[in-house]
Length: 123
Figure (tube, rainbow, N blue to C red):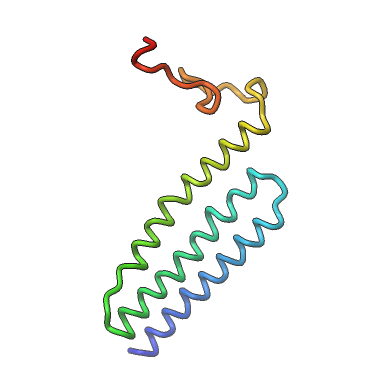
C-alpha cells in the first residue's frame, strides 16, 4: 500500500512540475500581454494545484492525518486566477486600446471598461 501511495504522490508532483514549467515557459516566450495571461492563469495554477493535491495525499496516506489546508489553498487559487486574468485584460484594454478600435459589444451598456451601466439615480 505504501508503494502505491508513493507512486501516486510522485505522479502528482511530476504533473505539477510539468504544468509549472510549461506555464513559466509560456510566460517568458509569448510576446503579447493578452497571450501571456494563459501561462500564469492556466498552466501554473494547475501545477500548483497538483503539488497541493500531492501534499494532501502525503499527509492522508502516509502520515494518517487529514489536512484541509492544502484544499483551501487550491480552492483559493482556482477562484482567484480568473479574477486576476480579468483585471490584467481590462488594464491592457484601457492602456492600449481606444474605444473606437474595439468591436461592438452586443450589450446595452457597451464595454464595461469605458461605459458604466446607468445607476438607479440616473434613470
